[in-house]
Image 1 (cartoon, rainbow, N blue to C red):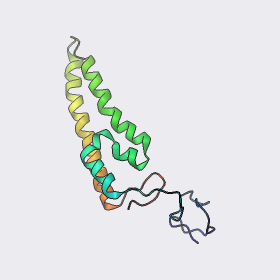
Image 2 (cartoon, rainbow, N blue to C red):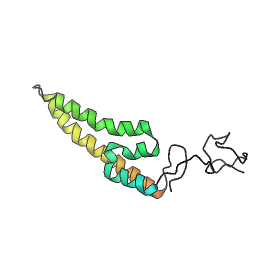
Image 3 (cartoon, one colour):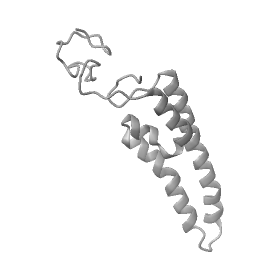
Image 4 (cartoon, rainbow, N blue to C red):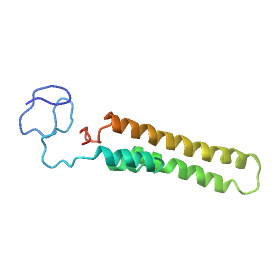
Length: 125
């Protein structure tokens, strides 16, 4: 049998390829992820990063989730009278939301095109 990702010869019962380390599709314990579910999560809930949690990219999902929350907290703190910080944060918060939303939309497009795999390296079904 050959590895689907790097083409090196592996044993028939191999769970991971010894050359590239990718999980093989024939592994019984693997749960396949849905392309439609992850794409819709990215499209509609992209700023929350739920599609990344679903695909197993926890770190990326946390960044996507915490970025707008941290910016919102900065904006709330800046409400305390003090001038320029409030103006900066009121501009930064919507801009951050827009960028995180665009990030989710771009990832949704890539998911529907089949360019993003789950964290194990398996194709979405």
